[in-house]
Image 1 (cartoon, rainbow, N blue to C red):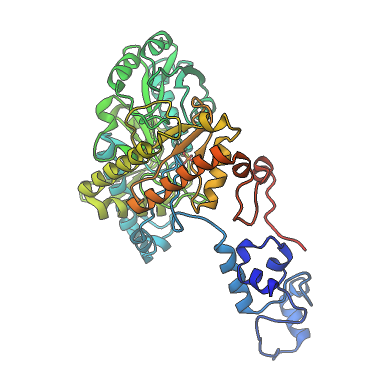
Image 2: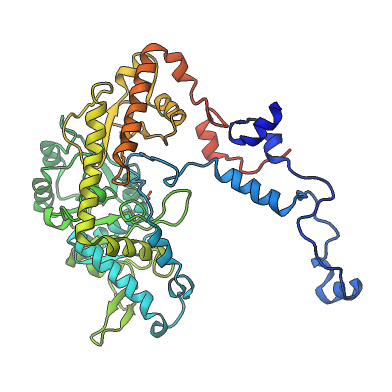
Length: 495
Ligand SMILES: *Cc1c(COP(=O)(O)O)cnc(C)c1O
């Protein structure tokens, strides 16, 4: 009886043998008709090397057992389709199914990137329209859809800065980056051949203008700024910041991964940004995570357009779409073909399905949700920068750490309450950060359940910190060695 209960609820059993060993010797999942040609002739026709008497070590299971096995495994995962996924800075919002319907249309899914331009006018139009919409949303003049992720967008954007300054006579040496930046920013800068100079944040969590003024000189190629920054705070002095950089001949790069807080409310081009990237897999609802394809388009002001990757998609005067490879100042290709085309299709479907009003509502709801969570938790969790936030809020574990419980422990306990953890320990300028981004997808009842869980955990920390330190209790595996799990993942079960 005990065994049957465990079998029926495999997600709570920790007996690997029971879960994975389904094979019965001699069982077959398929019934093939008997061979109706002489075996020897077949062997001669196909070649001996393609013949196998037996496939050693394959599980012998029925079709139904295979279906059940993989369906069961799929239920061990947690995704945006399962529940709230408040992973700060990642914008884990709902991926509307209409996007998938459109991306699977024959012409979208099966056209070949080597097909002649005349035969793929529809696909080229999708690329052109997507770029046009993103240009309108950011206020920028030109967009390249080639980069495959945010980090590659950063690299592409910084390379356009380098190409532009080099043509003006001196590419310069440094890029300034605030201490609250995402880790990809310094990485992209150094791959581009620049050196990073750090800027300190002020007491409000924003760029310190005096520090920027001291650091900005003619050796500095530009500033790389995330806005809203990783604290979820809008850099309200962004105009002054941009003016300081421009006055010394530098350019302003904006990491636009947090555009979910700005879409159809504010345009980076209007507050002095020269070049930026967007994350279609965050802000524009294309699927996200698990190493699947992403998309990090780069948007630039007119003067940087000649340096964007080639080819660009352009509309000729007769209305047809053409690929333009004749761009001598371009930094070249950064990605095969035209980028992850399917992501552009999904993003365009999302943009058109919502329209400007819908997108604005999305932004407002995302900001409202984050502020609601912040207001309901700040009496129990320390809020180091206490001011209205944008799309996410960042607490510190300082109070809980005094009882020996850190942000990672609280996150583990949150799993027991049925939620995906928030982002832990980032940004680094907040000790023991809890970074929460609910996105607009969360309904109020779901936010309330999350808030209740966080409040209950805060109480558990007060009453029984030891208990929280051993969480999670409801998952198949408990505390993994996270570094080894990432560096040397064991992806296959062996008996
Ligand atoms: C997610 C993110 C990035 C990197 O985007 P990827 O698509 O993961 O490469 C860069 N900056 C910020 C602020 C981000 O949140």
